[in-house]
Amino acid sequence: MKFIIMGNGLYGDINFYSGKFSGAESILCADGGANYAYQLGWHPAAIVGDMDSIRPEVRAHFADLGVPFKLLSRRKDETDTQAVLNLAVEMGAAEIIMLGSLGKRLDHTLSNLYSGMALLQQDIKISHLTPEVCVYLVNKKLEILGGQGELVSILSLTDTARGVTISGFEYPLHNVCLEKSNPYAVSNVMTGQKGIITLREGILAVFHYLRAVI
Image (cartoon, rainbow, N blue to C red; front, side):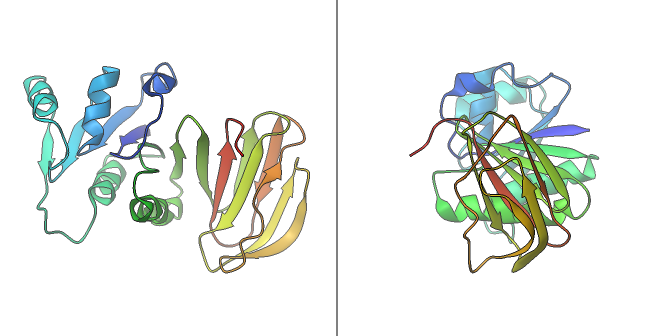
């Protein structure tokens, strides 16, 4: 089952997300992520959080629709996003696409990236999508479909990522060890419409820029 999780980070052009999904996905909102679901006319399966960032009229709207709210204390050991990720796992998620999980605050962005690592190790696919970039978490293999000249950066989220091999890029790698403390595999360039990334051990964050960046 595929889930869309909506956080309260940056979305950019909200129209970008319309028509991106089949409609068969389950939508879960982390607190203020519900504000964006409201803008898009989407109907969440649940809204999770301490409700400090959802707008009152949005909360009333979804309450009238019978959307369940899972209210969390403001004093808690996990973020709203971690709580909604856990709910997605409980509901049987096989793939999670996160929206509004990047930007605004760097600490939240990093927390959202790191929070997907345990899910990936449970064979749950996880990615983060904005109009400018898609970030994939990878522990085995990833095929990127794109276009010639698009930028792709690779960072190790674990201390090391071993056996990393990439093809379809201007700067190929073959069976290398990437270290978190030496992040040199950035700003690579796709040479065609498909790039392939594999690794033997560790977890990578792969940034595929969907638009031209400086």
